[in-house]
Every structure is written in C-alpha cells, then in structure tokens.
Amino acid sequence: MFPITINESEQNWQAGPYEGVKLKILNKNEATGGVTVLRKFEEGTVVPAHIHPEANETAYILEGQWDESGTTYTTGTLFYAPRGEAHGPHIARTEVISLTIFDGPLTVVAVE
Image (cartoon, rainbow, N blue to C red; front, side, top):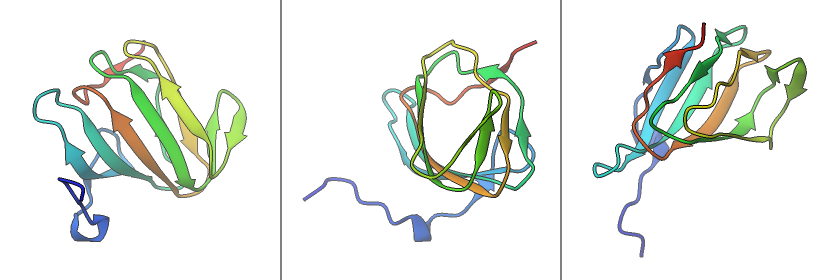
C-alpha cells in the first residue's frame, strides 16, 4: 500500500507562473519543497527562457505538441533541466499536458 494516494480528478487547476499555464499540484514534499504537478499549457502559450534556481525539473509530455529550440516534440517526450540551467522558450503548438516533477521549491527566474 502506498502511503500517499492522490486522484488528480479531485484536484483543482490553479494559475501557473505564466499566462496560459495552469497547475494541479498532485504532491508536495514539505521537507524539500519539491512538487509533482500536472501542467496545462493553452495552445499558443509561450513560456520565455528561464531557470529554476532551487530545483531540478523533469517533465513528461502526456499529450500535445511543444516547440523547444526549433524542434517540435510530442506525447511521450521527456525533458530534464538541471537546477540553475536556462531552458526555453517553450511554445505550445496545441494544448499541452505534462507531468512535471520539481525536486525542490518551484521558483522561476527569467533569463534576460
């Protein structure tokens, strides 16, 4: 038996850090600040280049098409961005749903 069981259908979407992005927090580790989230990007959403200074990010596309550095990625693609490493911009060509794990606090700093 798993000590924590979450049904995503019982969670509500909430505003993400960018316009056109919504999050469902599935689990939060209170000790580390890490979170496991579903992210929904509306079609046409552009997330500018940024870093996560306090967490490694692992994202898996469950559905949709996502452009990254001129390449379109689809369902089944896994992305990994080490803590402090710039990534993006990301462009949602369709609505995109991803399962994303941040192993520390979900903080975002724009890359200028």
